[in-house]
Image (cartoon, rainbow over all chains, first blue to last red; front, side, top):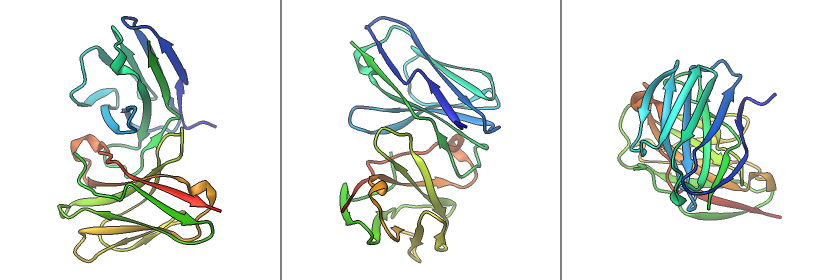
Length: 113
Length: 113
């Protein structure tokens, strides 16, 4: 059983397009996150939701919009894709903000051409 | 910004202990030391965490100096599957900042046969 799953695993698209990445966790966790790992392998937090409420919004362009329909899902929608958005996007979940362990998904490699 | 400093890379012979150092000289009294690792093309994986006492689990041991300004992650019998980037992270215990993890550059550990 996959704890944190993401779809799609690979996404290739052209500049200017709008795309979404989906994340689901079956761990019953309250908190979910999106991280971005750039070409230099630097991993950085983007967003965090706790019980469907946004609690972290790092300095991310407003072209990125997370949506949490329920606490098991956190999707990431990206408008007007740019070349610099190419990266691996990781979803993660934890039992709460106070939980010591975050469980990461397998990642979605986004390539913008 | 990450509050930790790690060597960029290390080698270890298979079957030997791997000792990965981390400096966190500005750590606050309410901050824990966490270790995660990222095996190539996978999401980060939690290893261990501690406050001031040494900790051990089935994966590794964590040794924290008495002044808490540095720590060492020990993989007692490294295998080829331990080849990964290891991240040392300091994070407040009370979920401050939404529980986000701030990743540095990590140490790329290569376990060689």
